[in-house]
Image 1 (tube, rainbow, N blue to C red):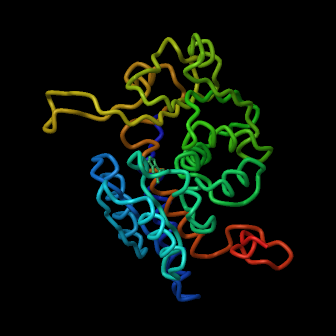
Image 2: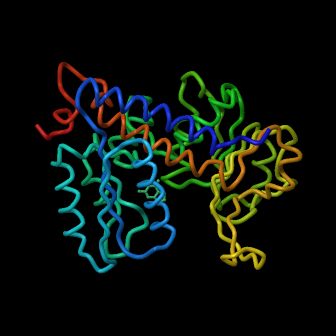
Length: 306
Ligand code: GUN
């Protein structure tokens, strides 16, 4: 089975669109998302453009602030504080990576947790780890949703993740190991320190490749019948295309598809799911019920220093 991430992401966007229309009709709220794009990184420009387009498609309000690579850290943080205080904006996304003189961690921690639709703020990361409600980071949430909507239940299965990034490897491990429905997996996180990655990958019932290297996962590394989720987006030279390059994943799709029971392609696999889950997170932010309220406190009060 080829898992059609494009189709599933379209289904989700239609659902979010319908929910957003209800929110507008019932409470007069239009979900609003602010993008901050620093510098001229072509991949970042393309991602932000796609995310903005998705907002347009489903009727969200969005603003994109493009800043030069020379902008000061202070000015970026001030812009974030402005969006924190803007009632039309429910989600804030600063596209990473940032130029070296700007601290990504400071940027992440300046965004209010209840507007952190990327799920990168330590409050959301911590809540995810202990199984509380919050924002899940979009790519791991997209992988989880792909599994659910393809009726692939990770419970009791051995999930092997290759890669330990804060954006994919670590959070997807945290999500799939929770004692919850559609999770409850036995999780291994393999990474560059392993002398032989294939020792781990061959044991996977569900293999999640987030390596960042074109076709790093070959057919010999995959157990027959495994489910393979490819998170990679790598550009390789290809003289037969107009642009001179094409996009491939971290998995050797052409060979692995013949032994896997299910596999996500690249493009049209995990990529569009990341955007769909950003729309889900923004809808939830706009509804304002992201966290369990505790003793009558609203989410913003919960995170104010006493
Ligand atoms: N850079 C690569 N992936 C992401 C993402 O999901 N969010 C942000 N903000 N930056 C990224």
